[in-house]
Image 1 (cartoon, rainbow, N blue to C red):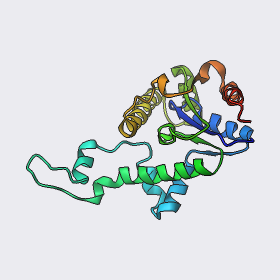
Image 2 (image 1 turned 90 degrees about the vertical axis):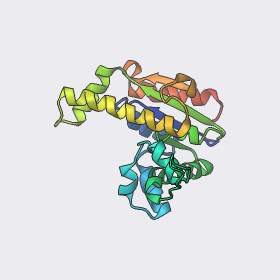
Image 3 (image 1 turned 30 degrees about the vertical axis):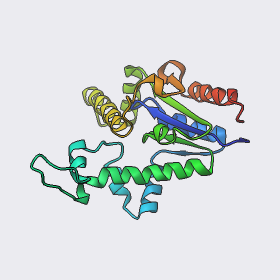
Image 4 (image 1 turned 135 degrees about the vertical axis):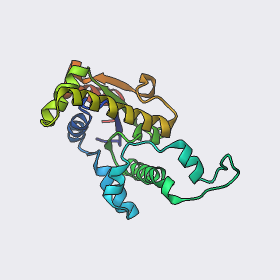
Length: 209
């Protein structure tokens, strides 16, 4: 690429976000950041990776957070403890890592509110991947042989809900609102490889490469 471009990918669980991101990054000649962000944030902060993994894309309880930052309780007593700040502090560290990556080079970044964190970044392409339930169920069951269909269906629902709550908490927006993104792609209709090509064609239309 002649110019830097940042692609952020928000995705429904098992819609192929990691696979699309990895293949897209290879085509663009840059890196894809998904779980790698956890390692970078841990290195930057000095915290353990397990701490970041424990709160990865999980929202903080807003009531506990209001206590932690020193807002008064109903009794008029102020509380201040770092325990309740863990999720928000780690989100802040990870956000700084995302901004640093975007400031230096082209990249594909999967999840973690990256589209919102980088909303003022030039040459930003915001993608949302979704897929039909049967497609996602099949992918999940193929990679997790130890769960049955009932458990798989529950896991799909819970993971999407968790990601949606996380996104809403930190952005104030709805995670699955098409208006938040430049491209919304149904991978169960077009396939993983075609999804990659659709994103590449969109980038080409911006005259960046």
